[in-house]
Length: 241
Length: 320
Image (cartoon, rainbow over the protein chains, first blue to last red):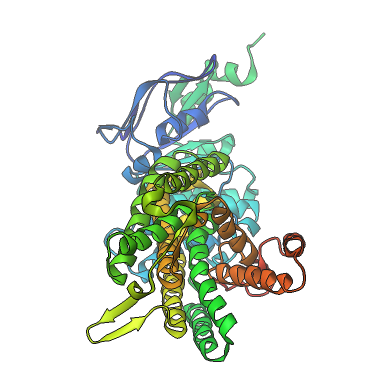
């Protein structure tokens, strides 16, 4: 099996800071991969390079066998890389319905009827439990619901790779359980790359974990391997005396 | 934006059109002529509103698109002796081509830079009109000769200088543009435009080529403004450089702000309001601009979203 996503020597500097430093990374289709690491480790910069929101200083991004390094973000989205934002950025003045209708109408190529948009939107809203709030302006939804709306928008793009940037931040515990179920469902049809600080969520969801530190990959492995890894413990907890 | 109540929305717009139709029979001569002019200029405002209201791009150069239509149609008659329909088409084509070119260049910028770039291009357009005064008539302008302003359909002919014909022609143009605007706003394309206004970065990450969408919006907006300019030349028979001056870039902005940006009927209300305030106040005092200024300040204070925008916000949420 060939990887869905490969990065080769991917780097990005901001001034003197090498936020992402020569990262070689591979992601298998169907996998749920978690990216973890201390704040400022370069996780968000890394997924921004993958999604095309920012351009790399050097290196390449290969998606589904094709080099996409030079492609603008919107083309990568059309190829199947969807990105949900760390800082919630739903369209606050549009209804939840319209928020999801945007990605739905973009992905409809064969069926252009009004009913098709409605079906697509309501399916995505139902999967995220927001169907009853379809008419509510997104800005008036609770924070947790706005996060779910982000996921619904990502889902509606029918992505092959869904990048979730800290999706459970600000969610209540009860909402987190539903969220874990949701991500498992999504992973039946898509590959998921998840940046997450909530360790119980990571340990439950991830097939494999990649640990970033100072712009580099510090370790990679199954949840058990990462838990036992001395270098990871050091990065998170500081050097043992 | 929302998919609710299409019947209500179209009903309201058709009602406004019907009302304007009835006005033809009841208005006294002076206001009859004024309203025809307002309808043509409201088309200008509606074109401006597409870009400013829905895409959120503030242009300070739309006089050049109005001017392109005005001169495209006017000069086609004066210099080339074309018929009225051909001249109108020429005006539209000038506006479409110019707005595509300006869009390609100006959309590389956003925000304040976009305002400045569009304003500069409009100034270039204005100065070119003055420079080529032998053809354009320069700042004196030119009159489109009355005998040329006739629409011929075989045996019957419509004289555009006749008040009723002129009013009805203005109404037809106004209605077509109003219903087109409504259809655009309610379409999926309209939803993308609003999304770009609200958050362009996010829209890109949903897979939309925002540049192409904005370019199309500039072209639609510019072409509608050109339609207004072309109609103005044909119906009112005067082509002058002051219509391409910076004042005519700011006027549509004012009309739209007054009536309510991103409302389909706001441009008409704003244009109507502004004209009538000027008309009424100038009857009392020569310092009417002072009163206009005070009226504008009061509106901004109490109706910050424009007349219709505030009505929509407070009472009629379904207004398109």
